[in-house]
Image 1 (tube, one colour):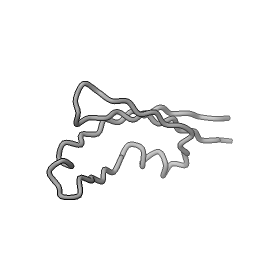
Image 2 (cartoon, one colour):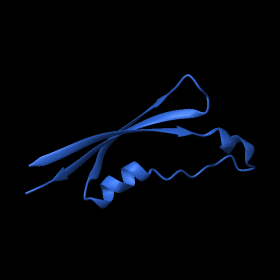
Image 3 (cartoon, one colour):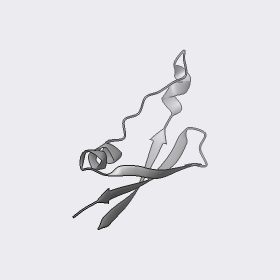
Length: 66
């Protein structure tokens, strides 16, 4: 049996513009939780928003179970 999850995360990147190198590392706790449970990322989609500082990323996760 195959189980799938769809997780959408919203990342705010406004603080990155204040740094000298303009990079920001973001840990996605919701995605990490499912990866630890044995799910794998089989696809991902990103989309902008009405704000310059936000991005939405949707992850399609899959896990085979017995």
